[in-house]
Length: 212
Ligand SMILES: Nc1ncnc2c1ncn2[C@@H]1O[C@H](COP(=O)(O)OP(=O)(O)O)[C@@H](O)[C@H]1O
Ligand SMILES: [Mg+2]
Image (tube, rainbow, N blue to C red; front, top):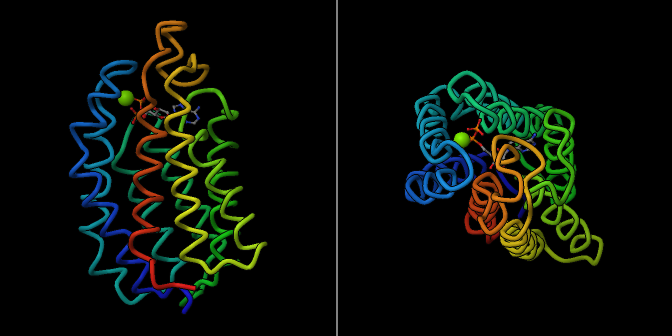
């Protein structure tokens, strides 16, 4: 079965709860190399998104994603808010009018989302940002569906690639965002944005595990 609009709403709800559960963890990661607000930022943003649920419940997937993006843009400051806002807005453009997504639709939405983040933040893989989790997640996902794997298997592999990408940020020296102000001292710490990106993609793999 493709990913339905209800599955998308379930994913958004799962993101809100996993970010609430990991608020302190994300804040601790950001305390080490940033300004200790990433957990609070993401939690505040997705709590605001949850408040929009009644008005998006019966909308198409594109409208749901666009509403998430607009809400993050308007409620989350710093670097993370605009970047995640762009991510969801771009996914929303690709899924405009859709009531369900195939495995290929999700590949296109994720690709547009990542391109939006890169266009806005100008980070490359290896700069120690969320791009280090999102880039391998997209390429592994695309590879899996090219092999003919069903959506839920592709998503599982994609989430695992995001996890590895997140861990790969530990030894890196940050070249973008606040952590870059630390220079060499940023090495040895996991990037908070790569961590939230992993949590978000892993929530999709967990929520859409019956989709094909
Ligand atoms: N230019 C960028 N491109 C991509 N991601 C970035 C960029 N700058 C920062 N980030 C991500 O944003 C995260 C920090 O988010 P957050 O703490 O919410 O914002 P701020 O850094 O403004 O306090 C970083 O861990 C990193 O993953
Ligand atoms: Mg911060």
